[in-house]
Length: 408
Image (cartoon, rainbow, N blue to C red; front, side, top):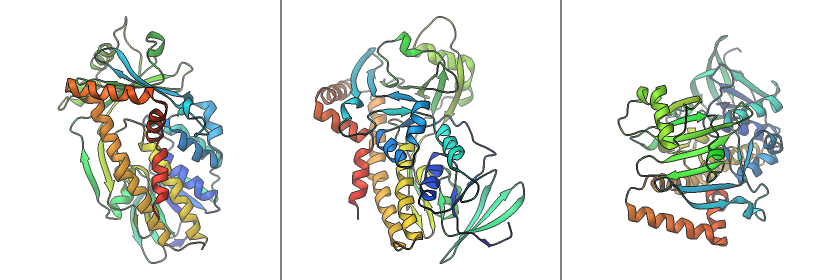
């Protein structure tokens, strides 16, 4: 591509679920897009896998939901457990929300599969082009365009786009190049995720597809996904001890010991994969800098307890695409993009950050009296129909959509 070649396509950086949903939503509004992804091809990134009911509703407007539901695991119920006492504390059943949610369930469907479905079904190389092994190295914006420096196997190139959308994760190159601060903190402990083919639910009838096991010594999130095999995979997420050696934690013997402590059984566990990752709570100081916009983890990151990261990012993508399409068609002025920043940043700061921090505290609470009080409150909430519905609306991020829409 010659230097400074003018291109009417919006440039989306990052081919994860948020970037691909944003690109698809723009493309279905007749806005041409080009997606740059630094990886050489689709990556089986074993991260987010929970798609909440309002997100399924939004994806359905793009024609995606009915394609992916048969490919994932439908999970209407989720349970909170007291791991120390081996007891179920409370159960929430999204089936009770069928009068409010068109999809009254969570879909357990890995994020890399969602990205691949969108790329395979909709990207056509013309008005929706996905370019792998393309690394963005520079951005310079003017009054009516953005110049983007990209390095690929073909060498350095420069693209001139009307807008750039950074959907390139928590370490976002776009955010850094735009000089946007990323305020917040990183937890002192890291998390470890272990995936095994062992069927925990068959061995323990108290388990459903989505489980939160509170424990002051070592809490656990336990979820089932379909994976790549007929029997599916169970993902167990634990906190590492502060200062625990990461390489030692990843060793087969330490992984086995952690699983045996969680659920003792005869013989070793068959582990499909294990990884350690750091966790932060951060929000960008703005989601818009002129013609550069941020969405998903590039704009906000949080701990994974509650499955709010990918879902919130997809909500960003849908909100932004609708507004940007109107701007590019001349139906609204650029000030509409400021409303995207106001709406989605407010949700990130006032709800997602607060809620995910509270979720972690619930899981790790060490004071016995506080733990018992928390459990009693969860039981009361789950047993009261209206209180349970309020809880499920909030946990599914339904309330955040209404909060965002109320900002004008």
